[in-house]
Amino acid sequence: MNTSSMKGSTGSGHSSWVERGSRVLLGNYSRENLVFEKGKGSFLYDTRGDGYLDFLGGIAIHILGHSYPSIVHAIQKQAQRVTHISNLYYNIPAIELAEMLVEKTFADRVFFSNSGTEAIEAAIKLARRFGDSRGRFEIISMENSFHGRTLGAMTLTGQKKVREGFGPLPDGFSYARYNDLDDVIAKKTDRTVAVVVEPVQGEIGVIPATMEFMKDLRQWTHQEGILLILDEIQTGMGRTGALFAHELYGVVPDILVASKALGGGLPLGALLTTEYLATFLPPGSHGSTFGGNPVACAAGLALLRALYDEDFLPARIRVMAEYLWKGLSGLSDRHRGKILEIRGFGFMVGVRVSGSAKQMKEQFLENHVLVNATGLSDDIIRLLPPVSVGYDEMDQFLAVFDRILSGSPGLKG
Image 1: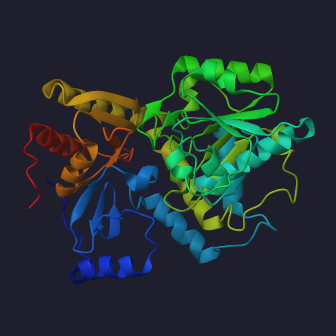
Image 2: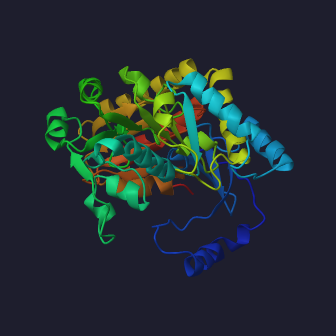
Image 3: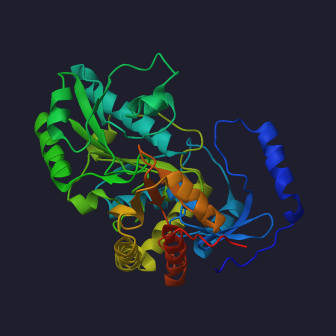
């Protein structure tokens, strides 16, 4: 296996970093006993210099892998100019990134935040301002959805385990069954202002919306004067084979929320909307101290330019994703009964397995491959590789997966 070393200056102190971190960091994450200090392309390197093939990408962040040259250059160049200004003034990277997002999408206006959950909060506020004069403030989201950890985004999230213990929660939120328009309609009241949907429910196990559901939902919300808000935090920036997944369905939202890959590895979120809806958030109605940070926006602009200028969108992503999916299908044929389903789009893949996904994730880790285990029944291996991944790296991943499914993982020595 190719996990070439990239020795770091702190190699001898790997375990001490784990111990030090466990003493001072809040214990709200379940962390592996791994300390990464460098990344290059499709690999992360720990403090001992050992390489790990990264098919998780910071959970859908590194769409072009680690330390992509044009993104690194853009960050360095902007950091030498100015790192922060404030939104009392304009900054050039934010303008240029917003211009390109407007050029490439349905949107007329862009609001920048620091994260996806902040962008979701902005979408909630915009929807409620839109419906305020008519007494409409209720929002329908989907069961098993995930939209963030702040209070509004958490309440919007359709998972009880995420909301437990944080009450009282804000009023005005209800949950409908995913891919079930009849249930969405049943949840509607005279006070409903918006419906929020993820084109692919990533956190719960990579479950795509059906074509029929998305199209019929868009038609119904139009007829009812209800806003359609799409949460494309995970699906955006080319991961599904289109810049945003709604393009695959042929529907256009009223509001779109983006983050994760958007910042090229730096914290950045965005709300995209129309000229008309933008009027409901006039000066003083909403803001973010670091939203539209010039360094983050410079990184995001470099990422977006690379996706188009280097032909990742659409051709290269689709060709490479087809190779990965073909390889996974071959494993399914070879190991019948062990892979039950392969679902998702492009480089957002959920592999449903017959055994424990968590145990399988640990076997991948022992082989220096990073994946994620998810699903309501501990049965989904979630894959989020960079779209810049090479054929040899996909072959390496598939070979490890093959050995795991064969029952002989061949632990990395």
